[in-house]
Image (cartoon, rainbow, N blue to C red; front, side, top):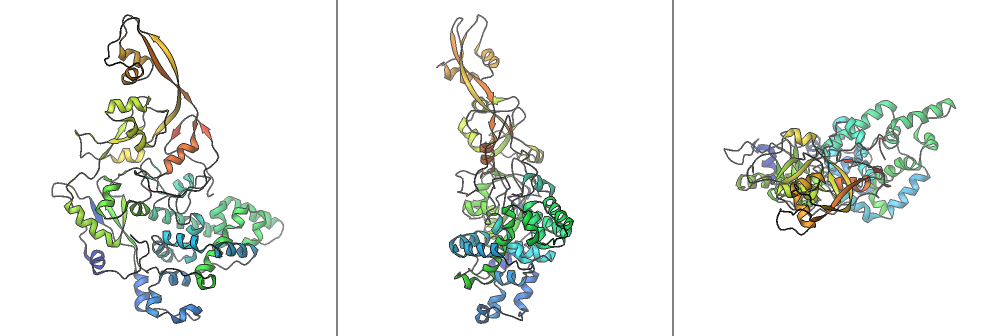
Length: 518
């Protein structure tokens, strides 16, 4: 599906937004599964289309654009809301030179961001905030909601774990709201509003978004103690290079979007209307099933719903999925016809610390299945109390994962190596007792010793691989935890991996530090 919306709303879409039934049911015997939530308000867009405001000074390229077409172009809406004072210095010139020679990169970023831009602009206008802030994800993540920085800042707006929690972005085993389009945008704008309230200056607010409010406050105190100005340019002498270049980067993108013809760039037209609508859910549903019902490619579905970290979307009515407006009607129609199960996954609580092979044997699964869906590297033991995602059993095919598990589940694993020992079977030994003594499974003992039965003889020598717990390379495991949870995994470009750190255990929802932004 093309990511640019180059056409006017269809009659089908209009009917969908105006009169679609509030709930969609699988069958009379099954509770409502999904209901459409109102699309983001379009009052401003509609008014602009019917009563366009003609600016006093039109840019040269606008003179030849019919007013109706101009009003329908989201780029003009962005430009009209520019309100942050322009920054002019050598760093801006350098950034303009860099971006100006990379039009393909700009167009790729624009294509990716075209899904989200209308929503961001709409939210900014509701709050009366400058619309060039809608371009900030261009700098933060290239509009990639899967982006992870070297400091483990995550998502389109690049929230650190601690900062995300400060702004109510939940981070569980099943989803990370830092990657969610609606939740992360709301949190980012709340954060920017807070920073503007602290400093009374959008340039300083942006510096604090990147550097941290404490760092900006200390820099201001240093300047004030010396009787020096406290504007962004004056404070930049105290800033690290990343923050010095942060606002110049945004200014460069702002200039290019403002006058693309000066950079030999032809921006694609973006319709001034919502790209997606929200759909509430009350039942678990597999990511693949949801994409299939919406008739969307898997990568397009995950681009709109990147917060879900496992192949099943859990949660009650508070959990929403996003769908392009044109596909929401298809989703409703296909859901009404769907006869199969919505979800094929269940949650299993680990009772004692065991290797994946032993757990898989008890569950009647292949170890590779358990490792793949839970992203457990080789030679790892799963700690007691951990939650594993496993295929549903035939005994309880319709049971959903409880809300409590979905919100509190965690996966704790330890890296292990093994050493081989020889054990001579005593008179009263049996295979189960030996397995328990060495914390391995009966199936593993049989495999290692090529046993077809569970009978062992007195004096028989068994070869046993005993686990040795060692430190875990957290960086590699966190990188796995941050990647997509559907198989095959859509190709996602991340930032450079962080330097390795070590620790004994890993929690899937590990606290990753207190630095505000990378």
